[in-house]
Length: 253
Image (tube, rainbow, N blue to C red; front, side, top):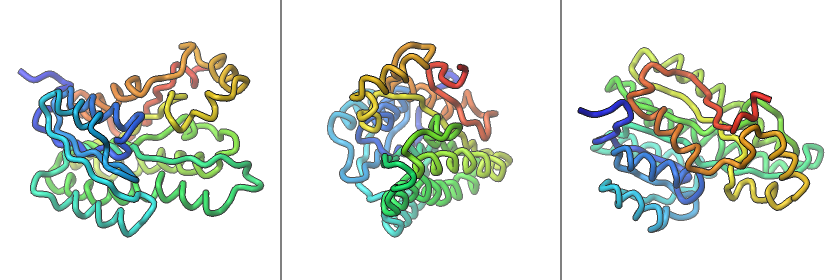
């Protein structure tokens, strides 16, 4: 008998699967039984991710796509939606960040962050979600952020995009829940990934962050991957429109 977290036979698409949270999510989904399509923005996920997925006895298909290029994302979205094997789980995880004070924040940085962190996830969810609605089942999991709730410092584009992802999660859930499609998001706290390297390399900023986290440590990508598996699994069949913090207690302070 399968358990509530069993994803055997499901096909999961994970964007940003080259490293960090996306790579950890791809492997965790495979451990739960899912076959995986992993997307990388500049190159397909490497053999470290592919091998870890296959070690769980699951298939892995790596794809490269420029998620900052709207035409390329539309083409990718249509390709995924048109596959003979339908996508059961879409993990819209890929993201980028640019740090510059708001008063001098380059418009090019703003445009790039919103393209990758907001427009691309919407286009993928729109195309793949349409097929999920048509067949009456599916899971969409966005990667939001603590900056879906807070403003941050020197990251206006990222904060705007992640606030919008929280709203998009709720909007799509409202439309698709009655069709058996679950749309939710994880909101990672401070995770030890490439996106936070500048913060971790700044002793004063890193200490201030750690002092605020009740758990007393930075998150690992695997901490977030467990929440992704939950939201992708039958255990979350009655969970709709939730932005789930995985933050070591940060928002509880």
